[in-house]
Length: 592
Image (tube, rainbow, N blue to C red; front, side, top):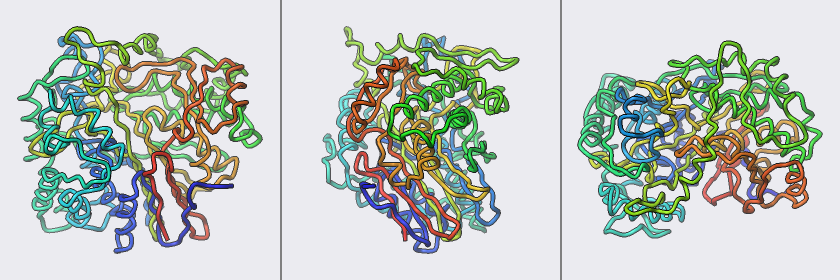
């Protein structure tokens, strides 16, 4: 079958990311003797520059890693927590029933830096200045501007010029939007990274990395953030100006935890995901439901496949809405939600017709809480501006997205990571540091009693969701994608095609995909489109007609719009394979 690019094959190492420069940097680290963990850290910092509309140094990252030496897998949680001042009562006092999608209020502790440093310290081999050298060079000398970066800045330019002046200083040099194809420099960010490198002092490599962590979270980095968030009232998607809640003390109290991944066995494979502080378990629940179907007998681009997978995802994501939250502060009944008995019962709800209901399951001792007003909030995205009321675009409600990294090295170490947040559209730049912070707090609810209700030192239930899979107990596949609520939808579809239809990685990435918007969005204003199903424009028109006949509110999207997947796998003979997304013309896989 034709693929848009070759599936990379090698025995030394492979790297696949959402941007070609980052992939080349990761491969450079492997060539210089670094391992997959060193390479992932260097790659991540370069993605901050190459895709600033999709992620930033002040963002978040969940990481799943495989340690070949011990044969174990671990999750590093780079999802920071809510400030101590972030409570339902605090938002009610401000007259807000939703956490804004932009500005200062939705900030959580920026978790990505600590997660990368923890992985570098405990699993990597390089020093901090070595992994940062690539990114510092691009920040000083400039990095190529792709069309989507220029478009993202252009869309926000009025907001920057009128409201977020510190962002204008960074993203509009000389008062102008950077031109496509030019080199874009980030001197303030370079200075921040260079200062961290100077602070990385100590008697051992581990101590030097910890010194940089302390400088950022318990020193000048945290102080700069706390000061900026306390001293400024800035516009957000509520249409009003607010101070931030995040403080230096919030930063100092937090450190990235390491957890065991969730696991679900499926047809000889074990799929690994992060916990219910992400949407990851919904993919596992969908797999558990789909175990009762002969997926391999279905045409992977046929209506029966699309319908069956979509209906299973609706059920899994309904449980996401009802039950998921930070398990450190909320009881999440994962044992039941992932059990065979529960999902056998859930499977019985699927018919040959599309469901228009949001149907969480019933778990003994729990009262499912779902939002039945999400469709009503669609108007908040399209309302016409009133007198003095900024449009949603001007308020920054243009959305950001995400990046992804997959790496396997010559020793068999493996990394799957999905960095995001802190994108240029999210919040004003902290001037002393040269970057904005994550607004992941918008994924909390403000109503009391929900597992994902905002609370001090609590993780928002994130969309970020890397994946890893074992085959016969051995590390086999690292994969993931940007895409917000679509991340685990596209990953599920890719995995099913790999397992049941024996597609190669690149073939599965290229194949036309789909997604549903049936459930409430995780992003402000948390709207839903019940029954909506978007299939990529390369699907046969007969498939669309079949889906419409089944009752789906189906529509045909553009030809190359569904997913930004990448993946890498290793086979028993030692061969490694990798593929990357052609959509958007930025993703790239490299290896030898």
